[in-house]
Length: 505
Image 1 (tube, rainbow, N blue to C red):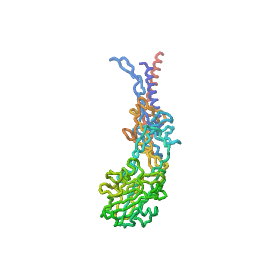
Image 2 (tube, rainbow, N blue to C red):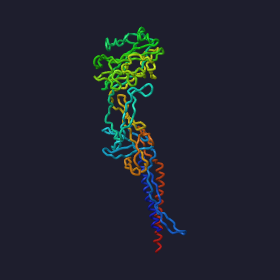
Image 3 (cartoon, rainbow, N blue to C red):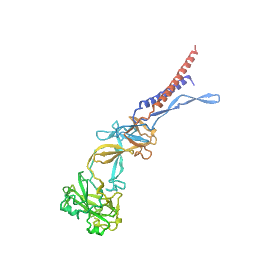
Image 4 (cartoon, rainbow, N blue to C red):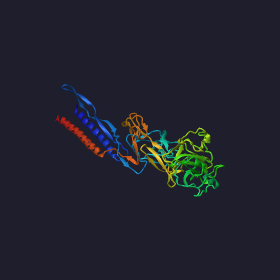
């Protein structure tokens, strides 16, 4: 092998270490870049030249070449921020962004996102973050709030395909009340004040005085336009000489009426005086509800299922109809118990008499009682609300963007699209913290954060660069020494060539 070849071997070393210094320098330059993933350069021997040796053929290396430059996709450290739309992935995966009006997707670990003037969630380049819109599937209007699932509970499901995340409506529309749940204690030591609450109301609508009932409780409900209305429930004990009381001794019976202010009642005749429902509750000597009957003052306005004269909902709760805006609004009503028996005959569906089989009634874990304590309201809830304006956005571990509104509603809006790849080292760096899919990386594997092998999302957090300065400085020193050593190869070979030239003198 000629001395010139030895010189070019040293040149390959200089070139290789120079390129490696470029990789190290780029890592150090991006030590403060959000979501940056460093790179590592791997050398390989370039080629070997065969030469004759005593025992045959030997090989002499001809230098070094760059074997691979691989990304370091290890987790970067996390920094807490004050912005809820600063998000970081803990574990595998990339956020997805797309230029406006373009079908190309880019992938990034940098989650410093903000909403632009059009309501799009974008990265610093204005590329729009991709996510699934969330469908809120309504469950039955009244779920047993006391026994676990909560009133108005909803399932959360993604729908369609990933799209630009945009808040195009910064308010929550109103929702009319469809369920009303009231739990009270009625003082068992109370005396009957009036024989017939219904008759007293009809005689002077809206003007009952506190001498005509034992207890009353009021709560707001909402119409379809978000207007608030007061619903008041009056209770009074049935007198001892009432035939139902005599027939059901030793049980006690309380009567009740459900009312609204007459001016709020737009029901056609014979309604319109604010009386929505009448009924009775039967308590055993221990003060536990064991039976009840109820009847709305006008038939509930229902569809074919259930039939139009049904006054019990499919959940087993009495139902009354309010008319606030000239249109009927059905509202389920519970005092902590519900009918679970068969309803074979629609004609008796208004539960206008006590059921002979007490097993037909089921008490909730928290239900109306008649204990020897002062009458009081223990629990109230209803599922309606007025219109509300968006106040803030939060992001949970699954990447679900949730809006909190001034009307108290918390609505799931979008779920961030998270992608992973079979070969993340095959991704192409596009600059700007962006990666692009290639044939070597394979197609993206898309899913919700926290599912499969995808990492979870942290809100108010940014992933920092995963470059470790100490490691890079050590690499810099070794690379500099490698470069220096290869330069010595060249200068030494130059000295050897000088000796060859001097041989002719």
